[in-house]
Amino acid sequence: ALPFPEMSLLVWSPLAMAINLDFASLDDSTSTFETFFSIILIVSVINNATLVGVLALRKPQTKENIHQSIAALAEALEEAKLTKKPLSRKIPLKTRATQLLIVLAGLLYMPATQQAIAVISCHPKISCLYDCYNEPSHDALVAGGIILLLLVTLTTPIVFLVIVRRAMKQYCEYLNSFDPIVQREHWVSYVSIITDPFLSLYSSLKFTFVYTNGYSLLMRAVLCTVFIAIYPGTTEQFVALCSVYSLWALFIAYSQPYQMAHLNQIVNVATIIPL
Image (cartoon, rainbow, N blue to C red; front, side, top):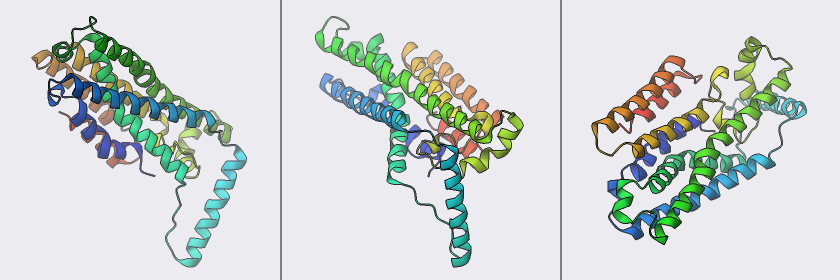
């Protein structure tokens, strides 16, 4: 399973920035903007609804399930030793599909948030295309923007945090210990054993920073707000954007939330790319 930050570097930051953060990339045609907005709206809402459905239907693993996973892994290791072949764990199709939903949720988060805020606040680019709040087409876009704010901007970080919270609760029940030292000590071995379709959201993180990926979405929401709230192309906007990026990069550099050093570097690169 590809860890979440690596997916972020490959598809999230570069592509998300390329397709939505520059309004100048769209021509002055209302049909072009409405098509773009509709695609973002439909795909984002369907993806998030599916992700929430998967989360709701997913039953937490019991101790029995985890012990079965340990036994299966031990058996696979023994077989690998006998056959002298490298150990390979097959990733179920359901897990891969869930990973795709997570990637899309991250990829679409910034475009959806920015478009929603831009439409509702009547961004200068929008005011060039519509007579804000005085024509039905803009009113329809505002309704869509409210849907995006509720079902994407607010829901996605909550879903990410709920997923991790559920995993943490399951982990504490498995250990039967709430001692932070014990929890940190067994975290790496635990995430290497369990089978969870949402594993990529937290398996690469240190125990103390398991909520980092959820917080990163909130940072991106702040970033989108800066893009919209401050007049585009001004020094104030540039300074504000650099400040948000810098604070996040400093957090990553100082806390080093990922277990492997190269993942911390990947997240820093993914943050710096848009600059």
